[in-house]
Length: 112
Image (tube, rainbow, N blue to C red; front, side, top):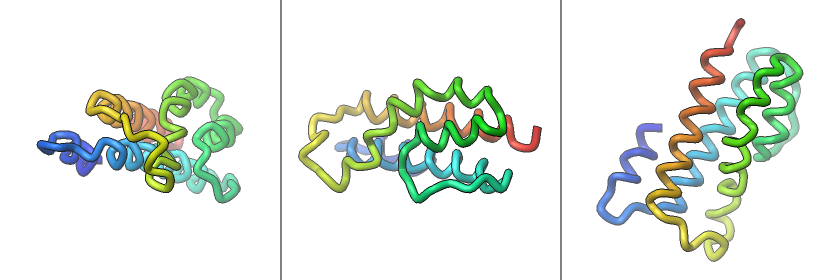
């Protein structure tokens, strides 16, 4: 996650890359929770689907829905560069903050 912040702080930040990595970080934290509780999940980048699977163990994961929704489209950005060419530093910063919120939530709820 430190890499995302370093990229955002660069003189000409690669905002699409920052947003992509923020989505990926959130995805990995949700999947780590599922792995920790032996909850099977499909091969997917869909944060809402992963969040819903986490809810099978802890209903509080519903609180992450707005953050997952804001990040979910960033999984495809690098594969289709023309889709989100107009991403700004503010978008990248918000994506980073959303991923931090998801990370902190998952870590707080591990092994409750």
